[in-house]
Image (cartoon, rainbow, N blue to C red; front, side, top):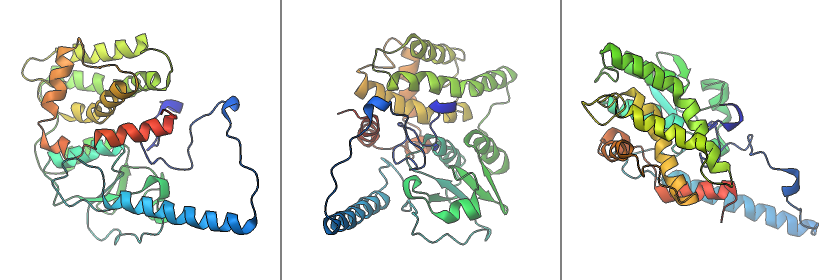
Length: 301
């Protein structure tokens, strides 16, 4: 998805993004710097800012804004946090609570009933520990999975890996037609996200590209009649889409005053039924938190 990626891969749609990645700002929008102040005042101000920043970071880490966690979620690890006892035989899923890519792997773990076998380790992407890149995952992104003395990454690969290598219900059907649809829909995820993301950044109306992408999912939801999901029954394909649809529904309503389900009954039913699945709702964030953080990153009052 190049420059439009959700880069938690940080992006405007993933709060608390890494400070190493920033939004592209036109030259005409440069921020004017304040006039120089006395050194003593600057030092006091900087110290206060550091204390304030750390206080906010600690408060956020202590209370991840997950709506229905159903488990004791750990605080996010920062640059001052010690690493867990790495490669000690424990299987660890490294996530950021706000990251939709990490949410894919997290939902998969929950769907398989692996809460006791795969430990969640949360990383603060805005203040990530150096050891995470050096000792765990050189790509320095989430999600990643520490398993059998190896670390694997990339969200869709992890969905497949967890489904294939751990016990629990299978997340892909055996039906050949559904397998074909699964391949097509999984290949379309980046294009769908790009189409939806572009209108969020635009100051204009919702684009034809965005409408077409939503209509494509509406049509896909009508293909199989044995359930309300993308392959009829809930599957890894839904896991690939839901973290992003969750955010787009919030952002289009709060920023564009646009209901992505209006005129799309399959889509509306899809979201309603998805919100009855504990494995998914246990990973959802407070909508207002997501909206406020995104508005802030986009400079929207």
